[in-house]
Image (cartoon, rainbow, N blue to C red; front, top):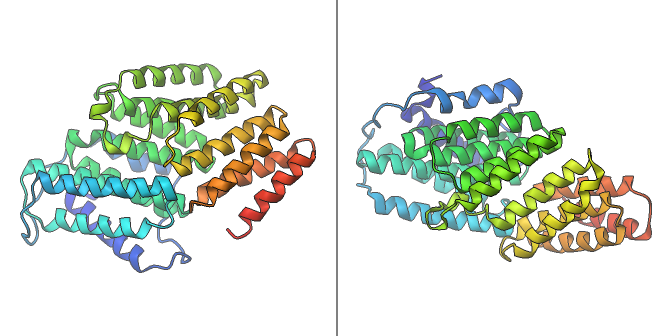
Length: 372
């Protein structure tokens, strides 16, 4: 297992994966296998338990000299790709990110650099793998997405302590994917492992987002006391965050995201304690009001979450209005995940008492989902 986490093995695996992805039709069967349960937990264990690896190997074929300024430019490009994903969804830019990941991994294999620059370069590779994995997840290719995220985790390990933060983010991505797929127990194990693996980092945004995801998992499982504790820990960690030192991969988790996530936790809790649905609606509305306009996909998710809370509260007209807003936003993005959430909303509308507003909402949802 340790050999698979060596720098040479990680570079070879990323290059093989990106080459194959670039020439494979989107409708072809995946070469990757979607892992769950013990297999998935075992796959991330080396990130937690392997000692920091040996010094980075010399390049196989020495190439261009790279410095920290080159890594900074790579990171700036990654930020641009992340912004495109947030605004338009993962479907349109995914292969461009895969190509950039392949290029930067070639630099890691053949470039000439100091140990410090090499560690930073592997952090950049890990960050690109996180964006490629998340876009692939957003496009609905879940096995391939998981594979990219695991490769990113292996790349993060090459950076030693400098890679702990991006490694925690990759674990967060794996846990969020598991949550989306309805594998809540896996999500909880992953996020708790991420908290352990990043325990020596200063409290801040990463801890906040991990605690929020833990709270959501507890809410789905009906662990309401644990949900409340984790939500409080997330709020405290976010209060201790220094925005000036927040890396680009964590910037998405702002106060708006925290409030919406807390609202979704209350919505899930309302399935076990119905009187909590009003608090869910209030929190989601607060977060939605503060959401940046360019976070289009997040705004669509917000409106779907709010509509679902209105359905649970027995407010069909309010649910219809927020559904309309979500459908309008969806016209500007390419995201299989948003479609998945719309299907869940449709199922909940179908189970609610029939009204004309509910029937109209379902008809509009079906019109949008039919071409997908």
